[in-house]
Length: 152
Image (tube, rainbow, N blue to C red):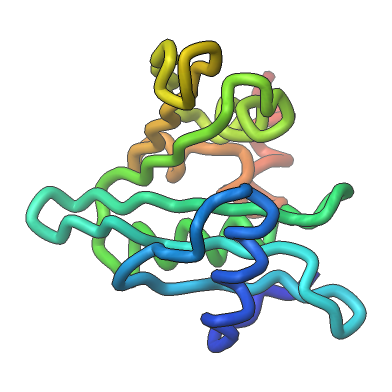
């Protein structure tokens, strides 16, 4: 999987289609995930608040493993380093267990809000701070992971 910048319109359409939402993310940035010359995933960075250092992301992909360590590194390097954020927020359907599990493995805090997706559908709000990302196993080098495994 290769993360690629510069395919904004295609990524917006792809993510909106996969999420079942309007392709209206306002002033945003988009990251494509390419495999074998095909768009297999996308991440939209939107609702950026430079005053508070918070940005929201919406992401979607084809079934399978489109979210690699290099994709995660690119996503969170953009949010925490290039955009200067201190927290990333994602809104996920309560029944999207795979996405919620991924965010939990990254170290996010989760808030479940009833009826946010309609009368019978709750939404999980995932909050990932810069500090949680920095200590995430996905952000450590292989040498750091080997050292922490030896210490355990």
